Image (cartoon, rainbow, N blue to C red):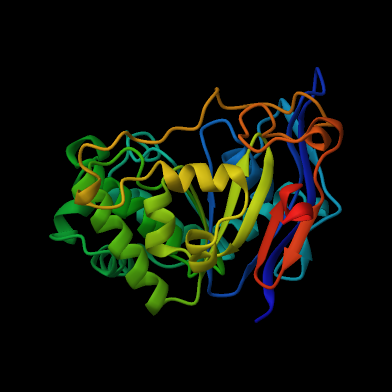
Length: 320
């Protein structure tokens, strides 16, 4: 299957002080697949997708060997071209359903605007399409929801509406930034079930950001694990969960409650505090917290060891 999105050697820094936030990461998303980038807060997940979507903050800048989407070089894309790409080819689902919608406009006006501006539909046809779209994401009483304002709706319904907006024009790629974070557990499960159904019914690929390994296990085809601005391990979801190789991935999986038989057992936690910045370009980004750290880890960044469907950046692979 061909790559829809290819990101090679992406770096993101702050403009004023040149502080590195994301270092030399590479990944791809194939057509129709779900790639989940998982990691702690501050690891660089969100700004990575913002760079891909042309929405990076003005105080940050990036460079990359290449960022190719739909056979187009995104690094040379201008503002006018981005307006055509977003919505039509690239859909965005933002992190907080409470603030992602315009509080001064009804849901109907916000949905209709997509079809009127992007597809040149009449208001009547746009309304019909919007109602159909709300039904597709399991929203009851869609005609009533069209007349309501965001503050009149629950967080779960708002998130479904945001998903509907991202799907409106059948984009090739949907970027979803922590789509379940602000929701209660029951609603999270419903949203993940919705993603799984849409995955089966739609040809759209998904690049999803989360800190929750449970979310990754639920919907991912492949997983990329980020720590301190770097991708330390990536591969097919079954391989990552059954055969983790990087000490950080092993630590994350060890900290999960696996079953009710774990009751009374002390939960595992990774020692130290998260590295939210790239402090030293020479040493391994995880060396301060790694229980297996060796001398070479302090002297040189590990290279990427590639196996079939499984890559890891760790010197332990040299001695295994």
